[in-house]
Image (cartoon, rainbow, N blue to C red; front, side, top):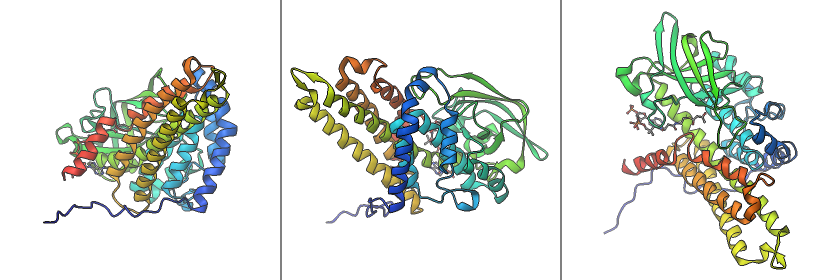
Length: 392
Ligand code: CAA
């Protein structure tokens, strides 16, 4: 008797070689990140400084609207190219990569997917040019993994929603101009009552809480945002009342690929430094990369990064082909983020005592790695999403 296995998507035969355009963007961003962002990464980390000039450089390099149509000022490139850009940035400076991915994946993308033409003209265009910066507000003090439990209220009053409540862990917090805010219209409806609103920074009653003092990605400006009787026009609603949960989940599907790419970049950046250090560091009369203990570590780390990158490209290709990629994005994020954490710890080990001090970047990569297992859905949530796709 033969067993029939269901194939949820037909993406097993996807081609993984980079196109000419993808290779060009990789080379251009790699050089930009190496020259402009890497030299400042330690200072940004030390001073918890938001690198506005890095964002401006991404904007002037036409990267802020990378995956969106030229009609809106985008570069009309695919999502594999987007993953490549995020990885190249993260190799040099994880802070810069998350500022960029929150802007593109979490703010511009839902406006592109769910927005009206008027919303795209008004909000997506300045996001693509980088004149405005974007953020995404889903989590709350009492709702993190359980997004449907959001209590920040949006009460419809005529042609305006009146927002009251708080949102937590907002990347690009104080620095952004537009925020995609997921709010509740009717607590009894749970996820079916949520609405997604584009909220502008100068909205009355919109204030910021304290900047979080984080373990890593220290320059990325993370804070709570608060609303007190803040009016938001119905013209700023993405989709309809009740679509907020779907907007958030679809947005996070794409965002999770960005975090997988970020994790690949952090791990590869850490490995590149460890590899270089192992060539220079002498122990027992020879460079430590002469020892198999170090060689095997280097080999295993590179193998794991390559595997994570393939999962990331696999998810991006599925997205580009218009296939459902929820499981693929969760798989890439789960594997890449845990791979990143494991291996940045190993890179610190290769540096020995020098890995434990800020004279070398190894400890920064290790601290930056941890958040990839937490934001845009913890590893536990990714396991849940993957399991749900198998149980269907
Ligand atoms: N795409 C489209 N629709 C989806 C979907 C997806 N990926 N996932 C779920 N849905 C739909 C379901 O089909 C269902 O639809 P119906 O009501 O029509 O049946 C509905 O949404 C509810 O689905 P579930 O019952 O599965 O929802 P749930 O309440 O059990 O939650 C969850 C599922 C996966 C746990 C979800 O809540 C989740 O992803 N939680 C994690 C949230 C998260 O990642 N937060 C990070 C915040 S962003 C951030 O980190 C900040 C930053 O700035 C970086």
